Length: 445
Image (cartoon, rainbow, N blue to C red):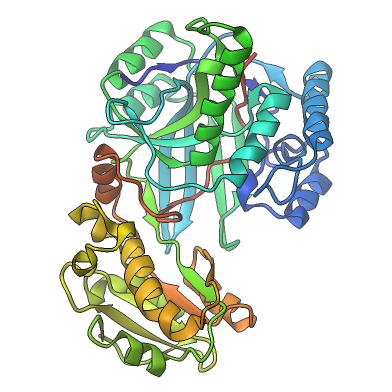
């Protein structure tokens, strides 16, 4: 069962927190960190991003300094612990493609579970090892969850969020902040409330008890918490008390059916290719892919991203920066990966997994078309832009020789594969917008 618990959060006491919070650590550069600290030296990045880039562990001293900063801020009152345990309703208001959305969820603690077929907490994609090392170093030093895991659950009628937000109706949020959207063209407003009523908390816990949780974002953070719990258990010399802080981690939970929840694609750009062009690609892809559009200008990239579903299932854009043109292709076969069943990388993969656009891109287009024709024995390298115009910009920088524009992964596919304990390839989804960091901190002490 999913065991969610209230927490006495460590928080900034101000109601207006724009200069104090930040985007998640893993989307920030060193320049971003300095910009945030220039706005306010008490910005949470001073704690949450001790080492840049956080793809691997940094020096021990960096994490020790982050812990000292956190402790000093608590001693000075920069951060304060709430007097009573609470659930924290959380709303993000944002605009995408001209439409305003309100995404609602809650901050809470969730009891950790190991992943497995009998569990109720499920990952949805593969992860990298380096970021886990960075997060574990930070967690050891601070004994805290500075940023949350983003989790989803099934609630067709949105009963849970309905109950929580009814409890705070007509009350002002305890904290509000604005952060730039991912593309920098708008703002995302985060609002936080606090629910301490034992009856409301118990009702929400009962509603959540039979639900499964699906990790949308924060796989590295969750895996780090499992490793941290194992370390604390080993030091303890026996099973931890059931209510020990290391048995829990900080989540934001949002219903899959929340009207403000959207999933955007994660595109690809590829490097270490020679002689790539649209014509040569189509020639190499003959028999596996068919062309379904005329050549389009790179200026049409953002519009193409929105139009891709019109071209059919698995349609994706192929971009050539030398000519600044893009063409749409789709697989010839209904089961594009089914004929490669002898490939060990595809052994045991289910039909729904083989229908993922990101799986088709990797195992059909990259492995069987692009690499043999253009990599010339070199290892291909990828990057993962979130918006289509970034594909064009990154390729035209000269670092990448080809771009691939994808459709978004349906939420139903996420749920279906999670329940089957199948992991999607890395960077399969982009849950937009990112959660704010710094509004709620969970102490593990």
